[in-house]
Image 1 (cartoon, rainbow, N blue to C red):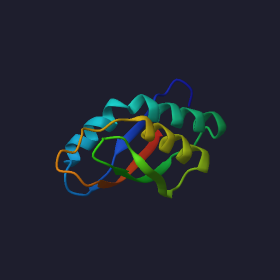
Image 2 (cartoon, rainbow, N blue to C red):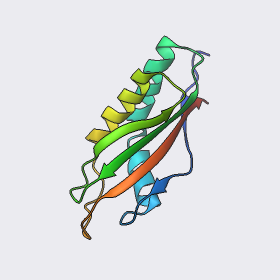
Image 3 (tube, one colour):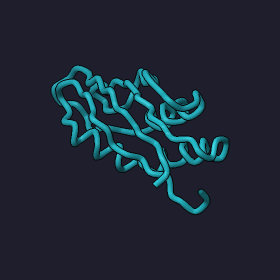
Image 4 (cartoon, rainbow, N blue to C red):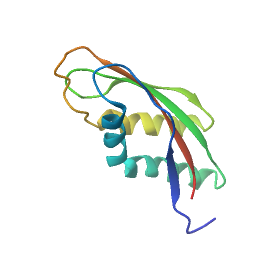
Length: 112
């Protein structure tokens, strides 16, 4: 329906040690507009599209995302690629303890 704002809903997150789930959520929330652009591009192709994209990614000590990939999706491949590309531009807090954090984050995309 025209005029509705797409909604991105937070689902349960799986995170490895070193960064809290809340810290990761805070960074993702700060970049919601990137995710909204991906969903709006999908809606331009498929006006009734709704679904879920689960992304797995690694955060090294630098805080820059690497090895991001879609692990599950109800939506088209282009939407998953858009979300992964956006995620790779984001910066998470530096990990002072070393090592990497592995995150599995589900995004629910639907109209509000």
